Length: 252
Image 1 (tube, helix red, strand yellow):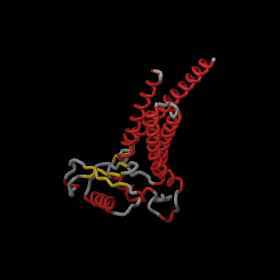
Image 2 (spheres, one colour; image 1 turned 135 degrees about the horizontal axis):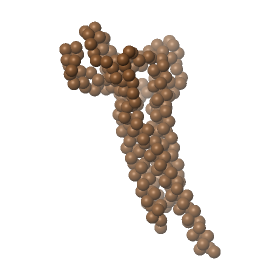
Image 3 (cartoon, helix red, strand yellow; image 1 turned 45 degrees about the vertical axis):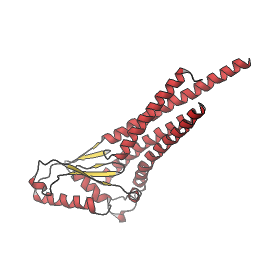
Image 4 (cartoon, helix red, strand yellow; image 1 turned 180 degrees about the horizontal axis):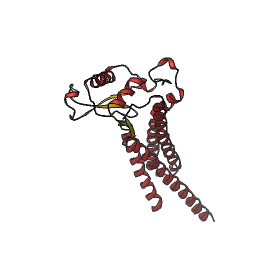
């Protein structure tokens, strides 16, 4: 028989875990981790240059320098799996300055996720930047590891419910704690990687960068997983101590 306090803690932990998992999944699947604010397109020469950047961005080969410059100049947003730019729907950009902008995106393929980063973006002769390379790979792998840990915890919890046992609860709490730490590490790797990128690729004049809502969703999901872990560990430890007291009382 489970005490009402433990049952309440388990229910709250389940709700927190579901919320955290939903937030993290949305964050992984959206591109608003970091966004750039660019000045309005003016002048025919400037328009031609931006059109060239946009065409290379959408159809060209993967190159950090090329897509980075396009993101800087065209109000770009970049996430873990997507990179997007805001462009007018018409081909005549200079003739419709007030046209409604549309979001055009390209995804990072699996091979692109593991592409090395260079000390000078776009210059393969400058040598590989090991720190930026592994930060990028970590920001890609860690959220997947976090989701995998939560799924594993859910499967163990489902089996525990079928067996009517609280014994695995401590392990489930530990898995949630690891998931929260992986998510937090993802955000830290992303921020560190963007900071290093901006050190080697200076932003153009009048271009500003800011954190997007997708990153904040991931940041929120981390403490939610940790709170769920704390409740699960408390329920497991308290129930175990109470069980041993009752056993000792019966023996006495």
